[in-house]
Amino acid sequence: FLKLVAPLLSEKENEATARMVEAFRAPGGDGERLHANLLAYDKRPPEEIGHSYLEAFWHRAYLANRAPIPVHSNPFFVLEDDPTPSRNSQIMRATSLVFSALKFAHAVRKGELEPDAFKKRPLDMSQYANLFGSTRLPQLGCDKVVTHPDSTHLVVMCRGQCYWFDVLCADGALAVTQDDIAANFRAIRADAA
Image 1 (cartoon, rainbow, N blue to C red):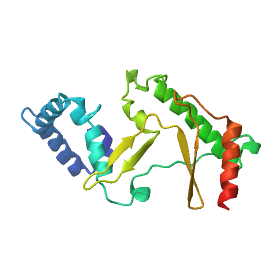
Image 2: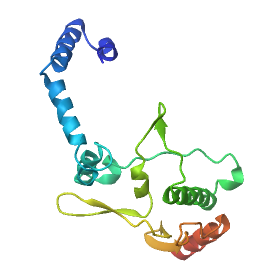
Image 3: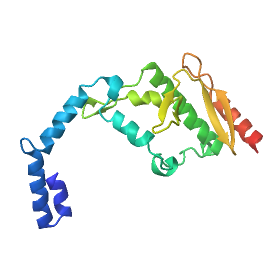
Image 4: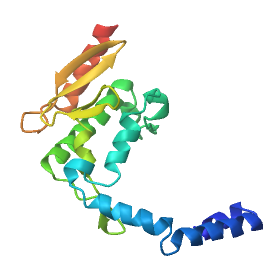
């Protein structure tokens, strides 16, 4: 830590930071006390704290936050155009993304994914189950995430209207082809016009 912050601080600030780190690391210091608290917290049952020590904190930080969600909490990403120009129309791009997401959803539900790992250590993938068939349900104080693991439909919003159609079979297998999805998207766009 000290090596990382050194270029950012003056000599006086570096010395003060080094003293704070030493006090934190000292026997009986805040570091030892906080580590003991984390170890005790980790011994609590998963029903109480979740699968990761961060899960309960995340739920409180995210689900109790009353700031506007689209601006403050939702991640987003920008996709490059598909290298195949014929697949860059809105319908074809959405079809490709949805079809890929459905294949991923099927693999998640069937437990067929290879474990994510960092430096050969497996990472907690329990939240993957919340990626599909889930919603944030408003509550007083702290909202909750509700997941329906056997949901089979896709909801599409177009010009302020909601549409849905089935995309998965009851066993989680794909119930539609890419052509089916594209046809549904075209029908939705035409109906919402």
